Length: 157
Image (tube, rainbow, N blue to C red; front, side):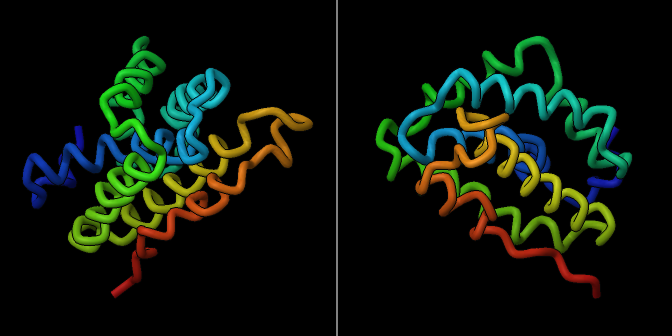
């Protein structure tokens, strides 16, 4: 599994695998409040991506994340992060920003699909709370991060 990542060191691979949960934590906690609906939605999205993700190697990342403890892992992550939203958002943004040095090392097809997948998770988690079917429920703090401005869209060489 993840044979196409052989050019990455273990720290880079770990970040690539953890990034979807970092995105969920960033968006869900951006407003200072990580709700049960956001946790549940993030775990659900990760599970769905294990079979809906079209790019096989991106799907493998979600398969690694998808297990019976996904919701508990998200809660554990949130508990381990800085307590204030500002510090937490800065920490997660800084971690995710490191992907800008990792994605160009990889196959373009994988990199762009992975990037778009992370943005999709951000959007789905941001709309998990309230509103009509979650629509229109995005908080202003989530709106700042939902397009993942710390990430640079991969370019084809």
